[in-house]
Image 1: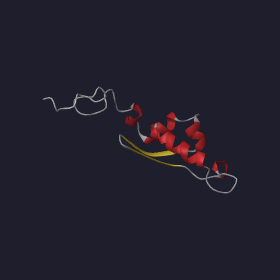
Image 2: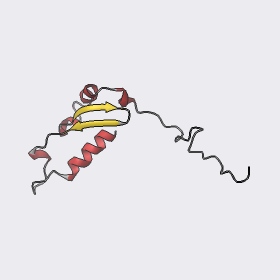
Image 3: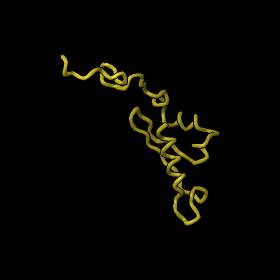
Image 4: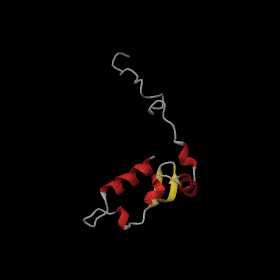
Length: 88
């Protein structure tokens, strides 16, 4: 049919982005992901992974003086770093 759009080279037949995959870390438990982070930046931040699922990650970080800005609020870099770490 002439009115149908051409297939996108970016989508597969199921309309998913071609070449996507589930990241391998989503098969880890929260404890295993925490262990994998030892010695790296997530440990320095004090990230404690609570839940790791294919579409959801839940963690917590204890707010401490080293993560604060001089004005007494949690430093924005802390928030961004935690979000970046949890998003993979």
